[in-house]
Amino acid sequence: MNSPHKLSTPRYVLGIDFGTLSARAVLVDVANGEVCASAVESYPHGVMEEILDEGKVPLPPQTALQDPSDYWRALRRTIQAVLKKSKVSPNSIVGLGTDFTCSTVLPTDKEGVPLCLKPQFRQEPHAYVKLWKHHASQPEADLINAMAAKRNEDFITAYGGRYSSEWLVSKVLETVRKAPEVHRAADRWIEAGDWIIWKLTGVECRGVSASGFKAMRVVQGANATDAEYPDSIFFAKLHPDLSTLVEKHLAAPHLKPGACAGHLTATAAKHLGLPVGIPIAVGNIDAHAAVLGCGVGEPGRLVMIMGTSSCHLLLAKNGRRIPGICGVVQDGVMDGLWAYEAGQAGVGDMLAWFVENNLPASLTREARGFQGGIHGLLSDRAAQLKVGQSGLLALDWWNGNRSVLMDADLSGLLVGLTIQTKPHEIYRALIEGIAFGTRKIIDAFTSNKITVREVVACGGLATKNNLILQIYADVIGHPIQLAAAPEASALGSAIFGAVAAGVYPTTSSAIRSMTKPPIKTFIPNKENHRKYDLLYKEYTRLHDYFGASAASPMKRLRNLQRASLSSNQ
Image (cartoon, rainbow, N blue to C red; front, side, top):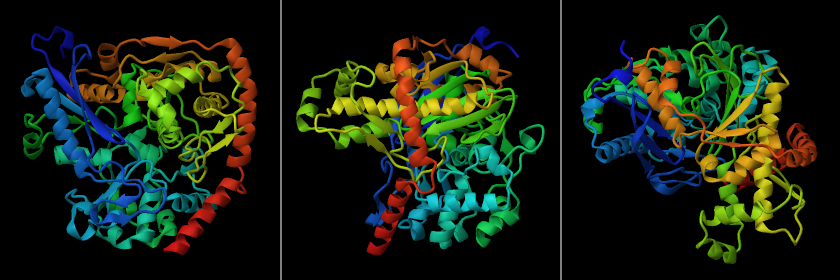
């Protein structure tokens, strides 16, 4: 195979990143990773959290649904946009890769048609896509964890000891219990990332990353092909209707990242304006694709993908079962390496909540003429504060805790408020709380002898706000490198597309040619780090009291909320 650098005719790959609110496409030169054009398309239905658009059906708390037709529309519009901007001929495109939020799941028929698109299910919430941050399935996650403990199931140790409400089986079990007619009509429960590949290729397959990290498929032998789901007895114990979950819904071939899932069908090619037969890479998790886009393909470099939520990915030569970590999957990101995942469910959306709901009108007016808007103004003022000056401390659980407590029923906490407290002081305390949560995750790795020698950050939040990365560096005591790629997940998907097309023989070689070094490094301030050590001790006390105890007031408040809502229905 010739090196792509010697090609006389330019060739390109498409990378598509399906995010929480929109999809992004990049058109990338396979020779050097240069992004020739990019485009973003918002989902018309957005995230349905309070009302289902069809029929105005009210939704219970912690619901997060989407309409899959938005994905297909966004795919077409973004691809058409990058082709128009770049003036590149579609015939020059040699591969396509995608990534998706995860675990974002939906039920379909045997042909892959989503049930929510059928007339009889348009007003049934459980027939729609359940987005990654759909947490209404926490009671089902509690049942799964109780059953796993009762049966001493081995798989649960690969998930840090707790299975999450965000993941596939919790969401399926919720539907079985609350809308059994949807489950009976479903021929498949599938990750949206695998569904879009099915739509593109006509071939149903599953990525080992999503199935391993989110769907209980745990490695038992020497490599990822030896991974197994729990036995049917376990699923039947959860609910009799789940006894055939694996055989009926999850039994499609499982492929490693970078594998070719199939080729673009004539129907999909016509819809997208692309040539028939383009190789399509197996679907990937958005954060996992970002690891490649950051130029990381070796152990010891923790990648933080910072956006609405935050995901922490770490590669290692060995696999260990670490308490409180979301999962560990062999070949989950890079062939031959173990991938560890942790994360925080509320990051960018936690700061957005504060800005949208808690600021005086005078401050909002002042921000109109400020570079960076309201976030820029708050960050500028927060940067003037010394460590500890606000007297505030926050627990970063506005959207539950993903790591290391794995409990969506936990909620936010802000301690130290007085009538003198200013908005920028709260803003800084929220950032510090998120940084403390990241330090808690790093401690979980290092205390279990998994090396973290460097930290690399990417994502919209990382690129837009220097204060956040400096506070992170000061809190964790590690330099933080800012990745060069502003669209790391989409670039990572393009890299997988190049590997699937055979342009590069390995993912490592593709990373070397198609990524650039970090553009900036944030060095910890030693004095600030010393002071943050003291605050971190207080954070840990609050963390353990409110998060690690079954008698946590947060849990009792959540139960009271559910009881109140139930009595009103």
